[in-house]
Image (cartoon, rainbow, N blue to C red; front, side, top):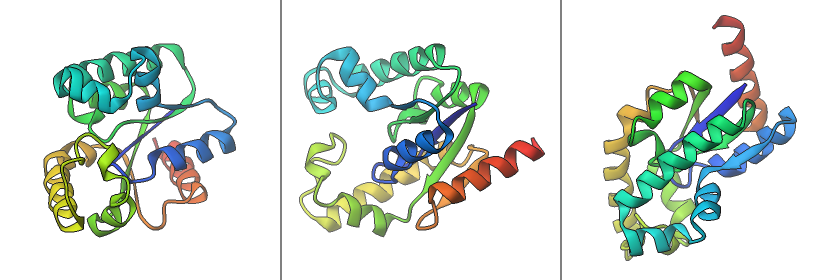
Length: 173
């Protein structure tokens, strides 16, 4: 089984993904880390040097390479991954997709000290501006996220809860 985690920046995809992969005994891949390894540059450097369009193509290429390489894994996608280059369709066709839904105030709390290193959030000078930016981003991405067959809403998204969701889905699908 491939389990794909989608959601906003700060939703906990990487943290939860690592834990789930360990509990399932399968590989874990963080798509952003895969992009950095392939491009030999940080995500921020890609955004600044090449622009978002270039980054999104690198992201789509890395996603397809990961799917081709791993028949079984837990994958933490980037926040925008499902929204570009038919990536969501690939995720839905090749594995089980879980949307980690986290309320914007919680995202602000999690991201306010790290926003400067995230390219799409770097221009937010304070928590209020960060909240506005996150609300706008979520509004644009929500229709993609909502297509995931599984959803877990913070703060209840523990590995145990996700494992039960996946097991229940697997027996009814």
